[in-house]
Image 1 (cartoon, rainbow, N blue to C red):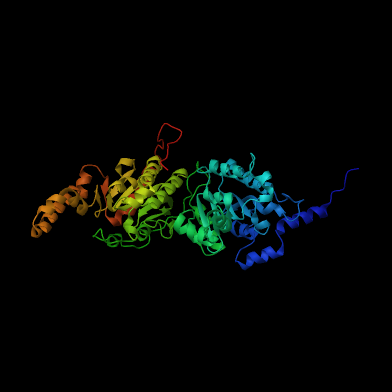
Image 2 (tube, one colour):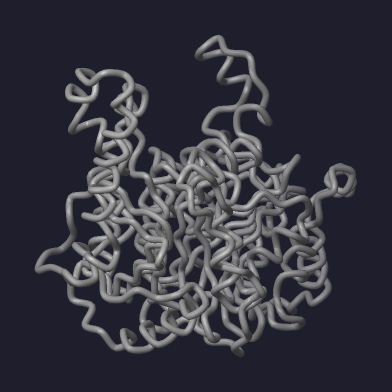
Length: 510
């Protein structure tokens, strides 16, 4: 006779799995301002939409409810997603063999069904005691990263980081498109502070070495610095609202709104030496309230983010002279490269707003590989096949013109404002470069007049109307007409052929 099914035992197993770890761990998290993993899921997704997979993973083991990770499908603002959430009340959210298998399965499902993958991370990394089961095999931890890389550019992947993401686990956020980090609790590091001291002798802390502010303002691994967990979840929701479910679809349109009232002509100073905030300029072009800045604290000389133009999603890249004069550095080149690839992967047209003196020069940046990083940025822009429009707001000098999708890089239009200048370098630097010996030989009282005359000649040569007459640029528009011009030109470019090159992939100068 068959055994009678024990409904009570099943109910108890379900209750244990849903409850998470011991009460003391819940209390400890609450004291740090941390929510329970299941609360995070409930706050993020549409009510009643979450369908969990693997609830009973490791249910026969003591103290390992759901094996420390929650996985499943849900809807966010009506759109289907897959998600995982580490439960840090279960052995600090560490990974066992079933944990790893659940994570792999949900990423595979997201990829197979073509929906975004959301990672709610709060994990101390692998359980060393279980390393043989979870680390080296074909379905071990490495398979998580392999699966993420395979899905990259096919589906959006976004991470919200609420606690640690330690050792190999730090690569889950690194392989995501963007990472939102909660200040004070979130951290990423390959080795703990104790390990660092043991290996290198350096004394540090997790916060100083891999805290949220470090990664959002210094390393660039983090993209959004959030004060609360609720804010991080809102970042996830907002980010996904600009992207399609996968690479085969178009970004979701929204209701069109007028741009914010900004005096674009008055915002741009006549003197190149005077800075202005490109973020304000962007807000004066795009639909009001739609600009969603990414990596606002890192490489601030370049502003990037999503926005909407008459309801249609675009990606915006603008030089910001408020920071380092808008000069491109190693970090800002990397920032642009990644964002361009993100937009190109998910069919988001690109708007470049140029006010760039060029790339930084000097021994320090040369040793950092400025040429290599600049080449990476130019490669990304060359390879991007989405509609691209370059607007020269004030200046585009040297290789800065190339890096901002200038005429040689197949933009769908190069537009200049009346304030625009395009040249190998600025007039002052050019006159000094060409006439340095002549100037030095002149009597002191004659130098100023000679320099002024040469500068005037140089300015006439690079006059923007002259460049338009030579078809270097496609049109010159007044600032007040720029929004309408962009709307029409992006609409005209929407159906373009996106073939680039006969190959598998290029060799990126990383």
